[in-house]
Length: 293
Image (cartoon, rainbow, N blue to C red; front, side, top):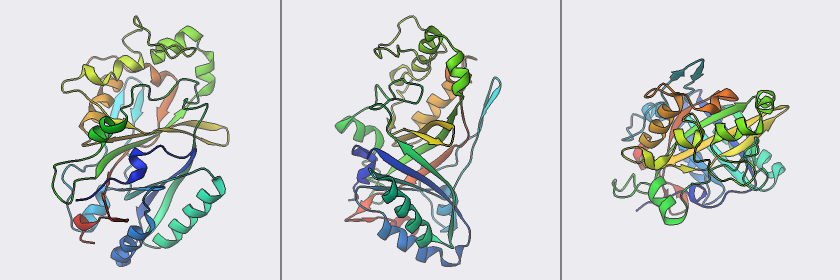
């Protein structure tokens, strides 16, 4: 029976590099995937497979689909699908740089790196807006139960589905909000992280309260801040046994059901959105049996 990629469940390093790849030339695709099995280690590399790559291999992963587009009042949530997603974890930026270079070289010319984003831990787990991120994130066995497939069959058990979005913050717009407006946008006080009982219906914690949905929409979040030049934001990462819980929360944030968009859209927007399947491990290698590898 497969086991999860350890980087999904264990505490990540202080730094990260998030890389997405497009399928450029499928002539040596099988060879590239064999190399990928060797490159994915037990701890510091998490790999996600996109729907286009699965289809290129003539395979099917039950539950995998492409990220849907959403439109809200004055904003869009884009779909930017990729063939492959790799999350490199560590504590040394130089090491991450060279690991990313080696990975891209090994996968070329079959795969081409389309985007590489630097992630990091900020202020002991806070978003760049200063608020604690993922306060009610499940941990331990509950985290595993939420994020990892079990009882789905030999080739799926131990795998996971992940939704990935890169959000860009408008720091000037956020700074223009009063402290009260900022707190009510999140639904928590920045000073002590306490939830605000009488926060408006648009507050983020109210739009995404996992237990309020039917069925409950629990996800395992592994998000990290990112920056490049003067820009920055949140690399949102949500693992689950399916994409259903994430989709439920996203619909709520957009306001598709009640017409009330999440107040986050006042100062931050996603510029990417993609779904991936994270294969299980067999021994110390990725298990790509479903792809015929």
